[in-house]
Image (cartoon, rainbow, N blue to C red; front, top):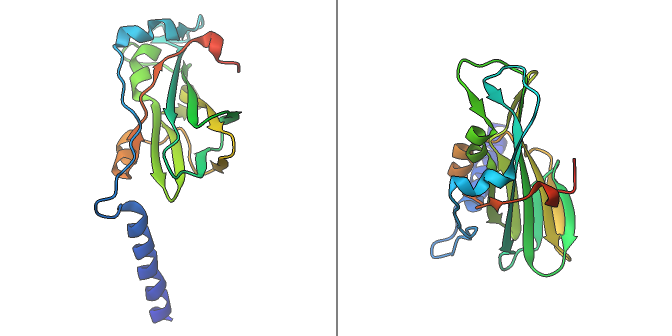
Length: 195
């Protein structure tokens, strides 16, 4: 019995190493990089009127991204809570809603402006699949920070919803696993069709 379990253990290790390490000389896909000054996001941020603690300024921020579907990709894997719609062509489109909604108390002032850069989207390509994942959320019974995604997937590309993937992933862990940050640009609340 021990021999049987060790065989499967080493087989599993071999499969994991094949998945995480690209073959030598292979090009690794990375999302395009663009940057904006913090001031560019001012029109994207909307503050809530309600407060429990005067030092917490709740609100939401709207951002978006676009990039061409990487060559060879046949499937897009998204968090289960993402809203998905179809788009023509080969461009992946994304809208990101970052939310701070806390009814807690704090010993230092903070707002959605402080939390906005700590939340976002990462991507990687593996086995003909483009994986997208949100990061930076944290919740409790008093509220927290959340990331909502609305993703446009090109027609004809398969869609897979990853139930194990949540917006509470940590960026550092994702980077260690081979994910790359997706650059976002300021978006408008009026372009977000959902509440």
